[in-house]
Image (cartoon, rainbow, N blue to C red; front, side):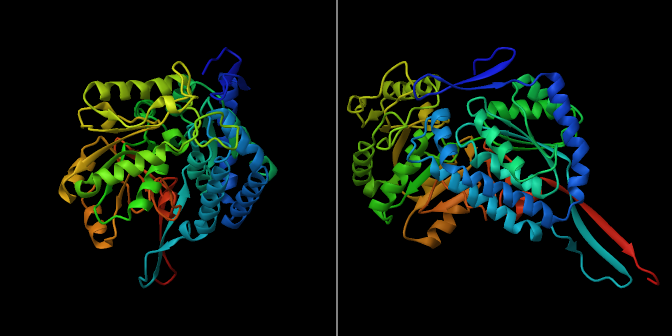
Length: 467
């Protein structure tokens, strides 16, 4: 993001205009934020869980009430079509309300069982101050996974959002102010990488929840290396799908096209490579490419647009380079960019692309694209599909498309991934643990397990009178 010493300026991918200017925090401001969080957290943690639930519920209510305005801001900040951004508000609400609902049970004392003369239980204590570092691609869905559970668990939270979506941080702050949250419990800070690293390496932050690139994850771990604090890292993926010969073809095509190209492919759990059993490969590819050609690339503020720009020109150029390299190595492109009038070199507007005759020697099949492109390969059957799916540095989600649930379960045990889908993709169920393996990161959010990283266990071993 272009910055000076006072302001962070956010450039919209829609038309190149400046759509936000927010003050950058200096060292004094950051120190004050950290001190306020530390100073207020203990009293917050002593409030009954019912009170923390009530505060968070009021914040969610306030946020959802501003949904249409917030959805429009998402479009202008990162380019997703306005017809689709309301879905992020709904997803935010679903996840937040689920975690609120399960918090009392998830955070309740764990009884260790009867022992004559003793009372024994385990209590989950908050860590203290949680720093949440959120990305631009789903600015609310990524942040809510940690922000709301951390607060429910009794932590103070500092949110540092991407410079591309600073208004998302402001909307979080507005919602918690509306809820009457005590001062210092939830705060935002706009700052650069060096200031973020100093916060992590200092003494005030007790946990870092980071969503972003692998390089960013390494930077977070490096900053935390001199301290005994934990980090939660959600670092993206190269998520595969396997379509078996018995798959419901039309449904699989429709779902996988959406999974690959929704949000212009800018999703950590979006579909980036597809393996299709040889018997149905030609039929699948023909139907898949036909549906992709139906997208309308253009101004995302217009309701008829179904595919918006990439977040910035550099991101689009990265994908263009992957496609060009793959074609030079023998891949065949099935989509003619000329059919998409908005596609133009030197802009973030990039036509969707489907590649066949691909191999794992091509970057487009092993390097995260984070854009509107997918490679499709034929495979002989289950064994080859599993081998291909596991041939990746990433392991966030993977999906199988089949009518055979038993086969899906058997193959799921062999695939290295955090979430295994059957006949579904690109979705987070808040009742399930959101986690990854390999370079997709470490740690867990959502579900009852999502509270574990945000708390520490404390054992109580009480000898009763006469025991």
